[in-house]
Each structure stands twice: as structure tokens, then as C-alpha cells.
Image (cartoon, rainbow, N blue to C red):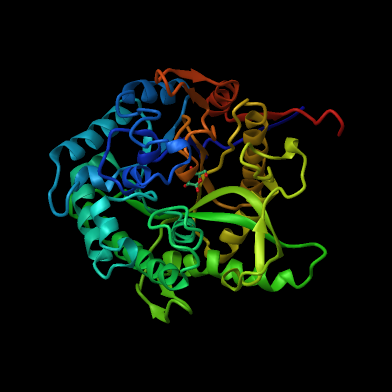
Length: 433
Ligand code: BGC
């Protein structure tokens, strides 16, 4: 048994997103995506975990599990269900949620765009529309003013790289385009501009309101990419993918700089990120492929591996990848790192406890090497809608019975609660090690 102690300065928590857990909002583009029959098993974001009705119970669970911080998203369509028609109810809903968190002493990290937005925004061409940035900023301004002192930490955009990939290359997210590189780049550029402008807007608004403790960043999806060990030419695709999937977005979001093929030049003079959010799940190995849009490479995870090494979704469990991506971020950007997501789909809860312990061991090593990891959020607090896959993947520490809404703590939830309480982690040696 190996035991290590995490520093008290590292805040531990869990993450969720509105559309994945709340239910009840018919005005998002994901509600429309469901109506169009695009979610597996016809699962609907309007049912599911029903967090909107179980809010206090879920916050009690967070507190019972000794969580110090909670990453949640606020849904734009609750604030602005129809274009330029603002809902007092939506504002009150999130003020209420944040007040309940404050009453339990849990520090929120609020995401402003987590894959979903109002259907009216979708119908305008969403992030490819020339109006996208001003429309988003108008919502941000309203929301940040309305939330005032209830939230100091903001994450502007969740995983811009996965968002444009799924929306414009893979076709899994609305609007469902495939291999549409032009829209991929247009949307990427607008997301960068939206973030850079939201960064200074949020700081300015909160400064005007008398708050000096604002922190703004974004959450970036990092996969650990490797070329195929026996196919040397896949190194070219790997380099290209790394650039188009990671570097392009890092330069834009962290440095405020447009790089080819998005354009050239700076969008901001000063800082545009107070922290880098790292969402890490797995590694991908590049196999040779036929599609020029993916640079003749095909990233695959878990190929040919035993089920024991994989999540229920077939993703390889590879904690070392978290080490590599955080080192990369620290070397390139010298900013505080929040691990804004890390988790596993594991219905049986057979692998989750070890998964968390091994990834926290990586965090421990990183901090010992002076990599400034300040927070770790397990994805997710409760089972939720895994976007186009629907409800079958189970990422929750807490199991949700979707028929009754009943919450049950899994074994890994008890283990993580103990880690949060003591900051002490133990890893059992593998039997055959
Ligand atoms: C997203 C989450 C998602 C998780 C697991 C991330 O890409 O931010 O919304 O549920 O990964 O796939």
C-alpha cells in the first residue's frame, strides 16, 4: 500500500454541467437535438438526473462528501430563452443555487458555455454567425452582474476544441456537420474572440461592483497524443492534430493570439487567462487513416487492450497522460492549473476508486515538481447525460436511478469523500505487480 498526502492548498471537488444534470429546460439546442432524434435511445435532457428538483439534496451530498469546490455551468437559455427576452426566473434559479452552495461553504467555479446554448442562437448559425460574439457577451454581462458576489471564479468556454470537432467534423453535436473544416475554423475563431473579450468584461464588471477576487479562465480538453509505435509516418498526423486540436486553441485562449489557419495577430494586449483548466480523460494513438480532413491519421483509444484497462466507453485508463499534459501546460504557459475534469464511465464502480487515486498520485508528483496544480474536479458528482450517447455511460460518484431520481453513494464516493476530508490517498499495489 502506497500512501501520500496532498497539500491543503489543493482544492478538491467535482464538476457537472447544466444540460447534463438539470432537466426541465426545453429551450436549449440539446432539447431540440433530442427532438430531432439525435441522442442514443431517444434519451432526453429534459428528464434524467433532475437536479433542478433535487438541488438541495445534491448540495447536501457535496457537503457530506467534504467537497471544497464545485464546478457547475449556468445555462444561457435559462437567462435568455428567446432572443433578447430575459427571464427573471433563470437568474433567480442560479442565484438560489449559488446561495445554497455558499451556505455550505463550497466555492463555485461557474462555466458560462458548456456545449449547449439557446435554440434561437443555434438557428442563427451558432458560433459561425457574425453575431455570435456580441450575443454571447450580452448574456455574460447580464449573468455576471446578476450573480455578483455569489461567484468569483469563471470558466468562459468548456472544451472549445471538442465542441468544434463534435459540431463540425464528427457531426455528433448540433448542427451535425461532417468534415466541415471551414466552419470548424470560423467557430474556433469566434470562440477565441468571445473568450478574450469575456475575460476583460468579467474583470471590469466585477471591479465596478467592488469585487477584487475575480479569476477567469477556460477549460481545455487535452488528450495525450502519441504516434503509432510501428507506423512512423503517423508522426506527421500527430503533429498536425496536436496543432489543430491543442495549440491553436491554447494560443487563442491563453495568449489572445490568432495563428494560421485562423488568422494572424493579437486580440488582446494583456492577460486573458488567470488559470488554465485541464480536462483530461485518456490517451489516443494515431493509426494511419484515409481521411485528408484528419491528416491521414486516425486517433484511437484503447485499441486492442483488455477490458480491465478500459472505461465502459472503451477509453484507456492512462494516468501518466495527465502528468504529460500538465507538464506541457506548465512549461508553455506558467499559469495556475485547475484540473477542471477527470473521470471514468464505470457502471459497476469497479475501477473508479483506483482511477481517482492514481490520477491524484500524478497530481501529487506534479505539485512536488512545482507544477502549480491548484484544483482537482472529478467528473462527475452524479450520473448524467453523456451528450449524444445519452444516459448509459455512468460517470457519477453518486448513482442516479433515472426512474425515481433516487441518489445512492457508490463505494468510490465514500473513498473520494475520505480523500477530500483528509487529503490523504492510498493506492493498493496491483496483485500481480
Ligand atoms: C465534457 C463533459 C463530458 C465529459 C465526459 C468532457 O468532454 O466537458 O461534458 O461529459 O467530457 O465525456
